[in-house]
Image (cartoon, rainbow, N blue to C red; front, side, top):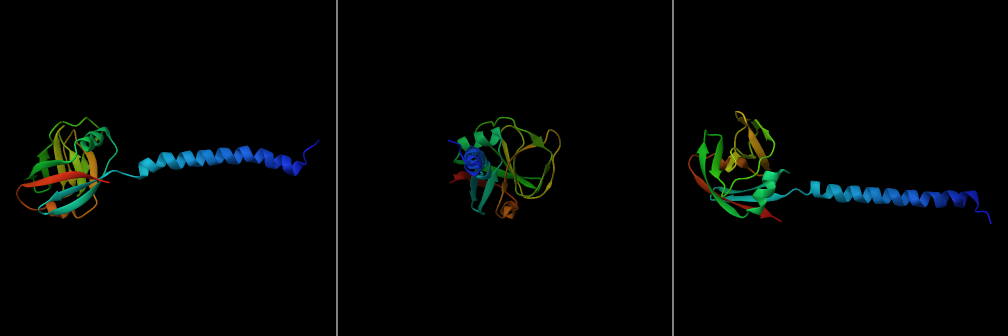
Amino acid sequence: MAIPSFQASKLKERPMRRLWGIVIGFMLLSTGHAMAQDRILISSEWGNVTAELADNAAVDALVRMLPITIGMRDHLRQEKTGNLPEALPEAPRQRDFSAGTLGLWGSDDFVIYYRSGRVPQPGIVILGTVTGDDSIFDCPGSIAVQLQRVR
């Protein structure tokens, strides 16, 4: 018995629709992780801010050591800097930074920039960006900050 041509074309469309459904579903699932960035809360006696984290090996290692408290001191009236409890792995570096950038100078030198600028070679590893008011760090003196993951 022959299948009418309009029914035959519908039978051919079904596998193609199913394939497109699978492809679109896979794309949504695979981009969902990239769209849902990790965030941290940075707390101090001067205030609290959140930051969205970058996607690199140094950030992965930093997240595994959270929560932590870091004693930070002012440096060059552009940043607060302090030592992490252990070194982070290397990741790509860049020289330019903006206010609100979280960075890694040496393997364990954590930096919060509250002004924009440029650093000498080899540059900094970008760990993330403050989404709140980074000017809370624009105060002379030292401060302890607590870093914890936001769920």
